Image (cartoon, rainbow, N blue to C red; front, side, top):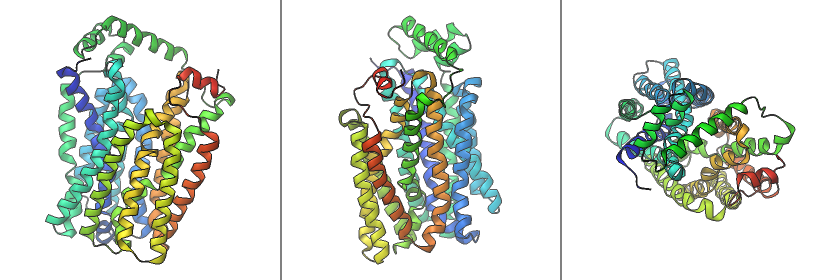
Length: 442
């Protein structure tokens, strides 16, 4: 199928929410040391400064689904873009610590909302044959956004005095956020949402605009799927027959964060400072982490359907455990500074090749259609809540013993290896119907 201009523009604008998601998630890493000095933060207060955005993310992820259904994904994304703008500018001009927390919380709402609304909008807009690849652009943009945040932190820190750099590091995100808000006025509503509102003629025009080859057949498929969802709306998730999918969704979400990925991404500069690097050098090393994150994610997307989800998780468990144990050893021995950089780069490689690529795909596969959205919400919630808890406690634990959190993360990856080995089914090349039979959900 040949892409047309309308589809390309709509996809790129929708995926821009992923870039802002990644940027706003990672930009805090370049500011933690400055914020500690400016606002005289204790380790616990710094943890709250980082994690409060994540609690906002939990709320945003939970509330954005119903919002998108009510007003449409495009309009809901405009609201998320406005939250990004307010957060970026508000953090840049924060006059005290409570105001910074408030604007960080607002940014978290935008992150959580766009993490749900962006992929859904792209999935609803894209023709069926291109859906997987176009939705994958959102995840790629998240990783690109993380890399851009690290690069932006490094450039700003090298040009502006460290005392004021944090304001610019936060504020620069307002530029792409404002562009996102404006560009959203130039793309259509999704055909699927229009069908839910019984605006069938408008939905047909959107499908034609997107270059759908057999418009009437796809329109009928959308109508039938919405009818099926409505009849299954009363199905409860927490039933005995769903116990294995529930276990899989919760544990993969938790293990994703028990690897320590976001603690490392959010506190990269602090970790490098513990290892003896200066602030600017730490910013530079963070860019290296972001670049490896992007490269490994692209590799993973080409391998996930060839090697399988379970195989990648097992491979990643071994690699991440070894690298994290190495980081713990470096801090215990208080030596070999250069090893720290390469062990963290290796960790990012193994994580992005396994957990980072598998989690959202796996959660979407293990639940039957009638409870899939509820199951995805459960897995996503376990991921973000664990993220907020770990990010909140990391500074306090690391202050008392820098090696301890990395030893803990390594042990969790060893545990993950055995849980995946004995409990996780392989979903590669298996139809969703066959998988339901294997999981005992018939």
